[in-house]
Image (cartoon, rainbow, N blue to C red):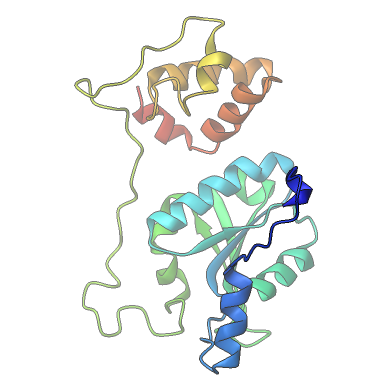
Length: 236
């Protein structure tokens, strides 16, 4: 303990058992489990402006019960998205690019279940129909025909719409004009933990003047912008 100020040498015994030691023990006993890294979807944004929309696509796919990873860097070159998808074992890649986004569409490519040149491996899927993405390919993520073994599997799913908190719910008081930055350092929305009319109205005002430069408002602006116009109208 002389390293920590002890005036004399003191004999000590230590015991550490972190994850590295556990892994080595499993190898030694030949009981290491085979846990390959897999994910169903990788969502890739074409550029920084598409990052918010990409997060919205990821959210919709997760609401549909899909496992989703989001590529952290823009992927103007699709090869970058494909390489990442291979590393994480993804089955499909969803590309979020300006051209398709303006039409309310997302381009999705299946990397595992079709031949290399099969035209049906790539589909443009409407944003509001991502809940039913398997129906567009005719197969599930593991290559089985849609509806096989489950009578209701092919039935369209109604997308969930984010709604404001109920009037009876306990929530903080919305900030006064000019105080939004401080408020949003502690809450994700002006409505507290759920979107509200105030979020929709402020977003529309700021959209005309440009993205806020302050960190909390900038993060909030990108997140609210990832919702569709119809979703934001549902908050009012």
